[in-house]
Amino acid sequence: NSKDISDTQRYQAIDAAHHINAFLDQKALNQEGPRVMVKGRGVHLWDSDGKQYLDGMSGLWCTNIGYGRQDLIKAAANQMDELSYYNLFFHTTHPAVNELSERLFELLPGQFSHVIYTNSGSESNEVLIRTVRRYWDVVGKPSKKIFIGRHNGYHGSTVGSASLGGMKFMHEMGDLPIPGVVHIGEPYWYAHGGELSPAEFGLQCARELETKILELGADNVAAFVAEPFQGAGGMIFPPESYWPEIQRICRQYDVLLCADEVIGGFGRTGEWFAHQHFGFEPDTISIAKGLTSGYVPMGGLVLSRRIGAALVEHGGVFAHGLTYSGHPVAAAVALANLDALDKEGIVEQTRNDTGPYLQKSLREVFGQHPLIGEIQGTGLVAALQFCENKESRKRFENESDLTWACRTHGFDEGVIIRSTLGRMVMAPALVITRAEIDQLVEKTRRAVDRTA
Ligand code: PLP
Image 1 (cartoon, rainbow, N blue to C red):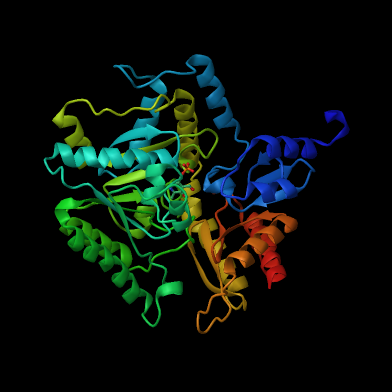
Image 2 (cartoon, rainbow, N blue to C red; image 1 turned 180 degrees about the vertical axis):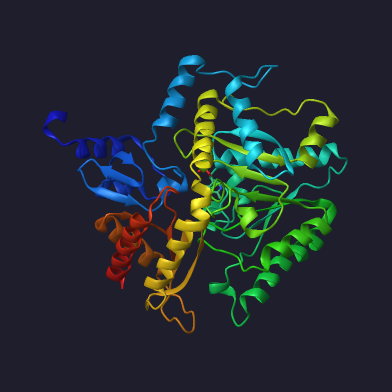
């Protein structure tokens, strides 16, 4: 009888009976029972037992504006009332998506002109594969078909996006990558830099791209796809030398540079888009998450003028479309979200105040910590590298177990931080205050100390 058991137990039982959840061992989860999250406000969450958490991960690095914003909620409700659904198929459009696109291209740098809307980051990268190949077809270079990604890159969970990604354990499940996708190394100096300086290592990693292009033949290579900073595959910030060299190589061999900004976009680094922080100019940007601050699903593939114009000028049908591409409710929420981020100066605040404050606080608290070998980050995203020996940069053999344990201690301490391989990650909502950053850092310190 459901009245005899708590909400927590009831939802855990339903979850165990009916769900196959993301990236975990469902059998193990069913024994433990998941936490049931019931409410969010600002940077805080509450579970069904009333325990409060400081959400240091903004959901899944997506609730950039924080939880519970009435302006986004009203935008959704008003749009549902006015026109709950229509589409961009068969010679139709609607106001919400056009209002959003006008705003989006005001915020994007001037080299971008077109967007294909999707419902998620995975879809944005899925759409990337066909769109890029279509581009090379229409400009008369149909042999340019191969995509180059990176080991431990993460671009999503569908067949195409997981292929672009370089997660070995994902490839092993499902016979991936698909043909026409290859990978080069990741610019993870702490792990692979050896005796090289970060600058030397950054150049060496970038030049792996050149070697790969020459090996495959530039006439066969369509694009290089990468996150400006690597997220789910280890939270890796490349050395400064990396991106300028990647850009030089892509230009030299006429290979499109495709930035996956699904977590880097919409203010995370203190710039509107992460490629602006790293100082390079991609040909496409994959977006999702922060576009709507996760209130409703929406993503997109943003195209440069060069690609947009070629696709349009060539004429002919591009046989692609998603029922919910440019969904009016998602578009209305995205517009309200972008308006709020912009008008409230939240990106500037991230760049000039809260971002530097988080970075400084982490370095003060963890700079000398025996367990933390490297602190990386910018704006409101940061990673703490676990290490066994600070001097030699020796990593723990069981680092994933340790970071997972740290994450669990974090939950006990009332903070949500994430573990990725050997690193602890934080990416709080951009509305976080200095006082909340103090709490985030202090609770994280306690979680790390309990792991030691
Ligand atoms: N690309 C990057 C860089 C991501 O971090 C993610 C998700 O975390 C994705 C793509 C996939 O996005 P989604 O989970 O919305 O499909």
